[in-house]
Length: 92
Image (cartoon, rainbow, N blue to C red; front, side, top):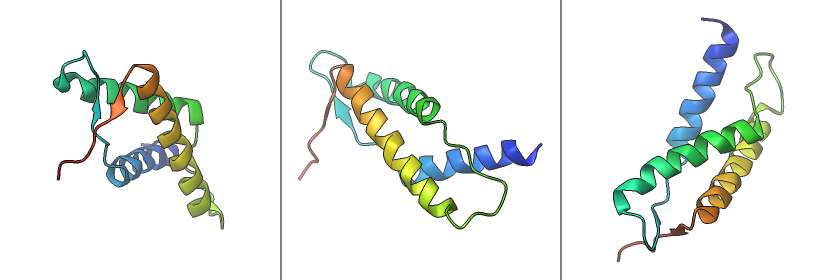
């Protein structure tokens, strides 16, 4: 595998591991469907942001990664809300 592919896979796994999905709910969609909607929105957000891990060492790599994660999370939130979902309230 090329270093670029490996870097992209590492980034995807890192982002997936750091961002535990927030359960979303929809008034008419079954609860078991939110995961597929969430996955669609995550893929779409990653494509929109277009962040790619640099193979070259950079002092700003951690900053870039953090900024990309923030933008991806914002796009996912927007995507889910456009589909009629709202964040579920945590159980107490």
